[in-house]
Image (cartoon, rainbow, N blue to C red; front, side, top):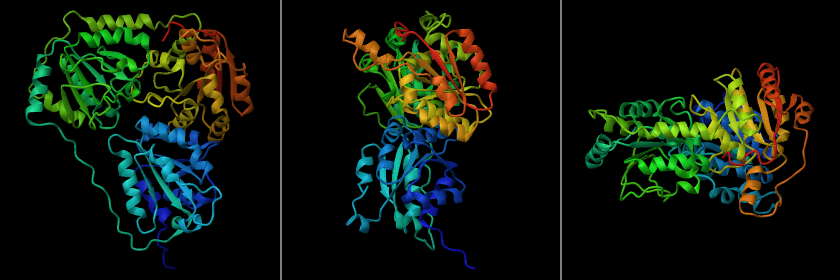
Length: 539
């Protein structure tokens, strides 16, 4: 019997497999059954979740470990709309993602309206591109989508797949692949200016951003910083690109006004600021225009033209980070920096500002978790006051050791991200940190955790309040409105969904719960009850 030609859905799935994808997430409907079948046959496991938004976050977590584009699958209409939040997150947080939705055929859509809507128009503003799959163009569209998703800066790409197209056999496929662009470094006058500025700097400071996560420059970045003695801060998503126990590291920055009171004066004192892959989309308003490029030397090395106006630089280099730093450093001797040792003083002040010896409260929960859990633990953080505190206190020895939504800052991401991490890193401890409101948004995914197996730890800060918003209300002397909710038994939720559940109210109880959870045979929900107002003065 002669082999059948591949279906258009098969060509899409095969290109995704070629890109390194091994997992896809979503909730199927009749319009995507062929797609799911094609993914499975290509070697990409499809995982059923309880909501498309959570599916996207699980897929993102997998991407952070295997480097392949995340895959979100959604059916027509309500399925496609459920994924809006996580796709917008992928755009802002620079996550390469392939969003595949099913749709009815164009001719049928002319006379049939049930659940029919223009997916492309909806997704156009929150993706890097949107395509409608055609049978003869399936291989080209698949390659365009993968290439576009991975190109700087990475992001989501949408493919709408008509039902009949997915099933159409495509003989004599001519495969086309876009060649990867080689690393580019600056030449000529710009390079010479950069070399001179670095050679003359007495108080240089580096800000490292998430572009470095995608250009494989971390080793060169570290060597460059060490050679020239340049202290550095990172954005939250770039934490761990250089291990945070490094003596030159001043930690993460971007959302904590408390940390900024120490870091921004150091920026002011610097006579050279190096923005290394620094994408300011993660940064709070306090980091807008914190230097005058007419008065301070600033070198901006970025993957794309920085047209955000969050900051300006006297020297803008759109180039590969590693190749550029190697060109700047070549033959450029090291020199002593910061003779008054201001960075060391700032580092000590930051440690004092975020102490680990609190008797009980959110800082104690974070400090105890970091002390008890093994160094190789992977962590996720939801949005809220706890995330700001966690991002300052949770030390990362590797990139992506802590993942979060740091640009869109959406709630409901930590639990599904932890499920995704545990799927691809079953032998490493995984913990998510959620506020109680964010946890309630995705509590149904505990059933997914039970079905996937493994023993992720879901830690919930329980204060029955939207703590960060309530704090802002009080700071503006407004009344308490719309931020408080009921006190729920989160440990019981864990047990109800087939895992373990513990409620803790002090360090000793938390320590015991964590020690048991790491050795457990299934997931554990740990409800850490803290007082309202526990974040006051801490973030």
